[in-house]
View 1 (tube, rainbow, N blue to C red):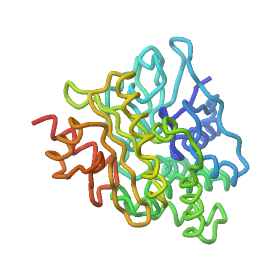
View 2 (cartoon, one colour; view 1 turned 180 degrees about the vertical axis):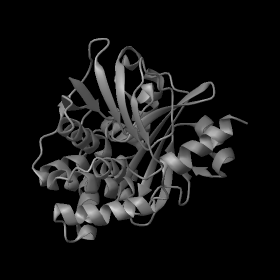
View 3 (cartoon, one colour; view 1 turned 90 degrees about the horizontal axis):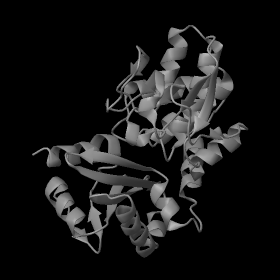
Length: 308
């Protein structure tokens, strides 16, 4: 059996990609089972509920040598603990190549598109396999989520084409209305603990000799998030200490207005963002303007800063 899973702190793309790719592998004759490495965020829970799909089982460990297929990630820090001791047989991803190691030749597919689902659609078409309506709905949801319905600079023409194709197969007539419903679900944070909010879309990156946590909250209601800034700062400071991080920031992305105000843990982070982005920090908040993509605009800029 091959275990298929996305990254830690999974988003909609990570969860749906695991479901869709496991199904595609099974249709091609490979015994594959989807898993998740963390709890669902509110948007993903909405997507699965609307599709009538159960969440994949939570996976915390596997015996050494187990076969695994990675989707929507390839770096060990973002994956299942002990990844280097597992047998990575497949990877489908739209991120940079990290520290991936395999014990034998693997099937790898990396494309510079806005979403893993766009690649999964290509894999269906290349295999001459019809896209099943349920899988189409899941992939459609992922592309809309990852590209913020084409607002993100990571969006490509292939992502737009994928949405048009998948919406027809899935029977989603009003894509805009569906995307807005997804974003509303994502923004309905209620009384979620601050520590959970921090980790809902959170990744750790090595920047030279330093290790930083970079979280993102994408919302249509940023005022709610900043109303809980004190709680979030406390959670960030605690996480920084527990995980031994050199820096930790949390970008609050206003989906509709396409702006980014980033909460910084302390003076050292404020200094880095000031030099790297020319961003002024006031009361622990740095204005990063229209830089709303962690993958394309935030992480690469920090990498370049620390590589100087």
